[in-house]
Length: 172
Image 1 (cartoon, helix red, strand yellow):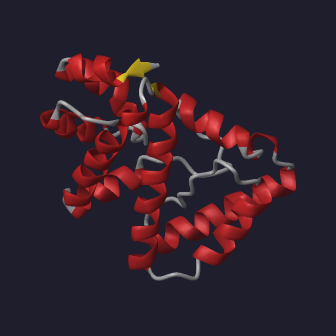
Image 2 (spheres, one colour):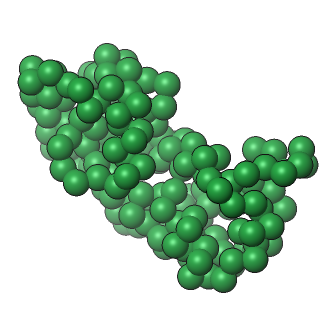
């Protein structure tokens, strides 16, 4: 864990290496956010990272979305994704459940051109499956924005896990 003081003292490369991973395979976000140092609070750091994504070109946003793995998939994932999916029970799918998730992931990806994204913390494999079935009915524009919103939630969970709060004034 890092204190806000330690984060503010990091050089650009350290910041990218130690903080940049909170947005899946997208170190460009940390690279651009570093320019806003010093960060007065964890909340401000998070908001600046979100702002960088929101101000990015749509192609960069799409690359960010596509950097995320399929939920319930068996492809190589980052340690964070493995841990998050395990916490939701996606590591223990039955053969039948795996096939159902794979079929939904495929249909979703074919329809939208990017994977289904959900901040799985607090979810179960059943609630994730239900969300997939519901969201596949949305428009591409709606799902694009929903995917970004879910990525912001994922990054917030990850950031909260690595930054230690030392005073009440640094709250999230």
